[in-house]
Image 1: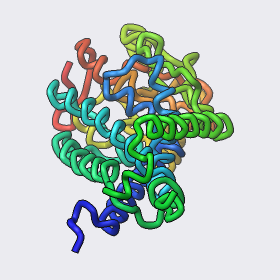
Image 2: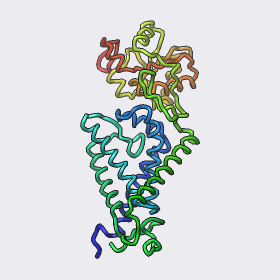
Image 3: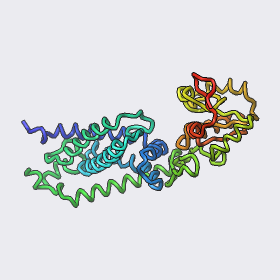
Image 4: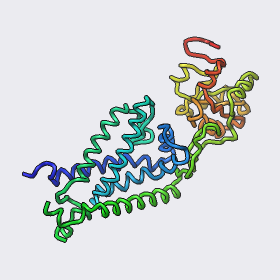
Length: 156
Length: 181
């Protein structure tokens, strides 16, 4: 029996879980960038000149990264992108947690309810662990269209 | 581990290159979609509260700065004339916690239910002043557009909202008291 960290099925489950999570997270934000921009403004951390650009691009970064994990198209790069975003989210959440700032995270929907910042941080740590696992996975990956999963690449 | 030796996937350069491609793809898709979407937003929003109600300048924005009353003092002068009806568009709970004296409760998500009774009481020429919480809130603009659509033509938006009014010590009412000034 393979050790858990090298189990391809576990990697597939983690990859699809993270992919579905980020697909869901990006969906509403893509459909309503204006609402998402207001939430970014509500964080009280970003200059006005970049708020709209963030609201336009971040959901699509999430979407593309999630698709790469789902389809197995260079999943390490998708995981890296998601990990970087998660680290940035956690930094932003931590800053607002430290200064006791109340806000709507807008994590999954521009109209989502407020969650406690501590809970959001714990959740993001869990996602980050999955992301690091996917990034560092060193065995053959199941059901990858390209990038570290196809048999042809294994023997190349 | 033998597998890893046969591939170059741990190569930092390759990882960086693939990630860069993803970023370029995502940003390209983002700007294309934003350009064609009816809910797209401008590249730069209006996030300076000194200008007026903050908003992302989306294509379907309801914010019209020409309707805005830009200071609490101006709103108070209009209030003192007694010719205007102030309309509180916040939630019922917020209204009950405190509102501008004499303001009509009209929560933004209950317009359709309340508009008939409102129209029976106030003719179209009535000067309406809508307000919500402050300059981060667009509901007062949403309400103004709703009133225009329902035949009212003399509508302004008090953008500083209830809390600025209250902090100035101007007349407010709460549910458990008829008047506190």
